[in-house]
Length: 606
Image (cartoon, rainbow, N blue to C red; front, top):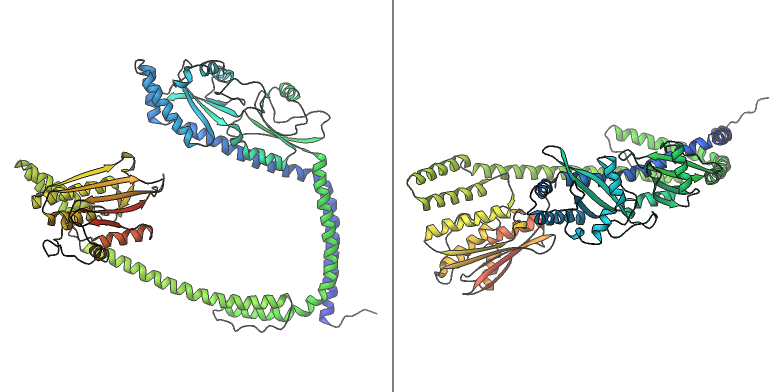
């Protein structure tokens, strides 16, 4: 007589329980069998993968050192200084000072470098400071440098030392410096003209290596091709003498290290970008097996828990899963067809309730998101159209700038032929102002270019009004190339000339000061000795209202452009935010000072 189960939920419960429990038992036995046989292979793969990561991180640090050396090698200024130092003995001291200052700059900019030294072909250091005792003696006795020269290699690392601070001993643990030697080549004729020594902080380039070895291995080492220990991490179960013996027996091949009676799995890997160094890592077999025992216990616990969970929950799953899932499936099909489904009714109180409520919330969120995207797209389209219209209007308002520039150049040459030097200067100034104001695709120019616009404007102003204005510009060379918004300074000077100095009727003075307040911004100040303004007038200027001069009772004439201080204030706010705004200080009959800050924004690609 066949046993039949009439109810669907019971059939589902029994079927699911039998299938899942059987599968779990079979899978558990297979996993245990396979895992026990493949245990060591898998641990080897894991260990090799860990070694790959550790070596890759160390290679990145070595690569940064090599990259720094290449940068110094390609420095044209350093090239010329070393060549001159070798050729001009009379000025050798001057060249050596310049070389040492340039190399110190490179060292200060790189956190992993203690110092950088240059030597000529006679192993004479190109640094006056290190030619005095005791450094001179330390350099002469630097065995690693002498050994590198004998090898005729292009580059290489030393063993750990304290060079160039004091004499070093044979203990690598107490040494804080590793020197990277390289030949220095004349790039014009590819002849060696000296050597470069980069003294690297050992703890810095090995910081990630040390951390990774402590986390992943019982011990780790970096050794060179002679078996010298560059770095040790953890408790190494063999001595350096044993290591050198193995290296000697293998004739320098340290890819496979085998030491008798050592219950440790050892893995080695050479660096791709520096073959002379090999990384050695070790992990005890006991530690490898301990991890696998834990995993085995976890697998057993998962199997037992899974069997119990299947038996208990299969009945409830079969009872509650069918109807809600079908409802969700139909709603999903309706959503796929492009229609928004009605909210599903929630009847269950278990995980299916979360599923249904989550689906309902998802539909609502998708609707809201769809509307937001649609609205944002419409606003974006409006903005793009407005931007294009503005650019089109700007282009249409220009009367062929190339034609104007060519015409002005023609007039300039006619003036030259007529020996009208003053007229030539005015034309050149006017042409420069036109180029700056009519350039559509350039929003930013250097401070130096903006100051040229100021000079050009004042040149035209003084000719036009036969009025002398003395200008004094204070700026350091190292900030002249910092970029600022186009026509941000010239309109301020123009306002000072027209609104402050010209109505006063006396010779004017304008001083422009450009200073660097910190690493992040510069400060620009424009000070004149004009009429000055009252607080009421300052407020009107900042809301773009014309003001009448007290002496003429008329609005001042307009000059080259119609850009007011309000326009400049708005542009600063637009480009850099509310923290960057115009500041105006003024005293009647004394003068006005206008100042503002510009953040230093690095150029792309630098």
